[in-house]
Image 1 (cartoon, rainbow, N blue to C red):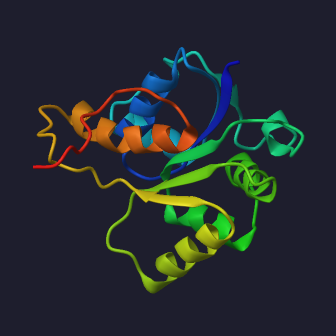
Image 2 (cartoon, helix red, strand yellow; image 1 turned 60 degrees about the horizontal axis):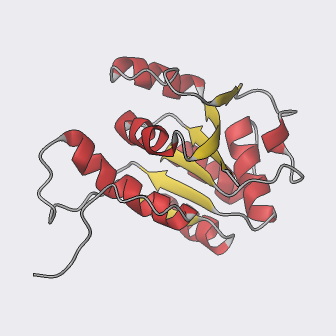
Length: 182
């Protein structure tokens, strides 16, 4: 049975992570994609085409989309990258758009909800929001790639982070060198 994965893209730099996630999920999952207006602008600025993947696209203002309902069964949601504004909305239970509504539904239904944060440094407010989202059931990750595998390209660097996301979603895809000790 093909897994269903919801992917939200909010307005933070780091679209390479979105592209690498979509690349690795293609052919392994049914993907439902929601891209915020600011994320579209950032993708254009970063030279990324998010429309190049075989996905079901949902408008960010469509709160009647299937993924906005707890009756839509899926195997996990990832927000990549996840802006601090989106994190704050999720932590507060405020759902003004489809990304935050789908995350809220994922948490209330106890489905996997991964937030890949792309910000540095963190303020006390950010940390409190991370803890609140974590306590509600979200998995908090940061776009902080390791270097032990000596990546030769930006894609290899990003894939080390994406591999961890795929692990948490239950995919057994060997896309990155794993730590095996010294």
